[in-house]
Length: 269
Image 1 (cartoon, helix red, strand yellow):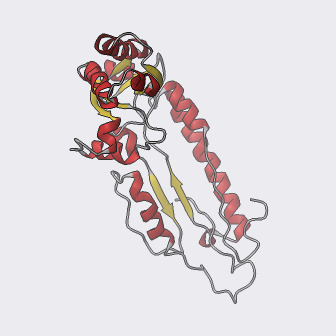
Image 2 (cartoon, rainbow, N blue to C red; image 1 turned 120 degrees about the vertical axis):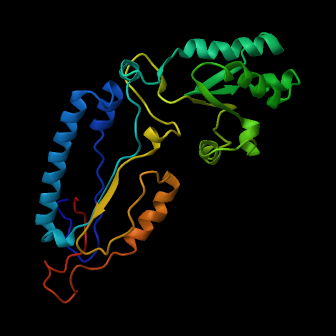
Image 3 (cartoon, rainbow, N blue to C red; image 1 turned 90 degrees about the vertical axis):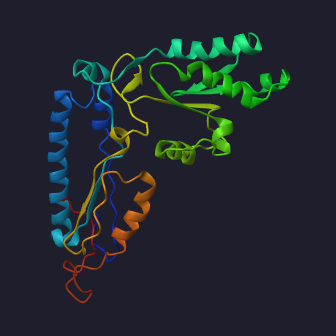
């Protein structure tokens, strides 16, 4: 930030406060240490913005945009204590349910060659060697876990490639985020608040507690932009940001003094 605000060009400074993410994953959003860190982060941001305002000649020359990147689930044990849904999934047992089903249907083999979160990758060479239809293997694996108490919905690669059985908003999110070159052969969504692991928490589901997050901006030289809905999807953000930044205008005329004619930077709400 040392050389920001010294030319007529607009300077952009981006900062990520990653400690909040690491701690939140480890202990969950309800832990008192998370609140303490949030207060410390807020104080740090306040000092940063005060320094930026001093650097560029006042708050009229600053624009701030602040955003979280996603929401998070409470630690399952806390939810259970609150008599709310949720729990922890034994990944070994979960994987074994798929492996056993494929062994029973198609013969013993190493069908699963990898996994990503709750999804599975199957051995396509093995499927070809046994002259099987990939969609049959996908369907059998999906049936094996569809009735597990923590599974909400399964999506096979074949379904996602052809956008089959896409009936809900969550289905649409999954279909639009599926990338065939890297995506799994079976994608699975757990019921709300169910997680892998023996401790901490995570994110990455289509449920509201994961996909809703805070976004705010402020600048005296802006005309107000429409407020983002709390349920705005990630895909709507680029357009919303374009609407916001299209309203940028100089805070003062270019004929003013060098200090007062500095362009907008960032200012906190």
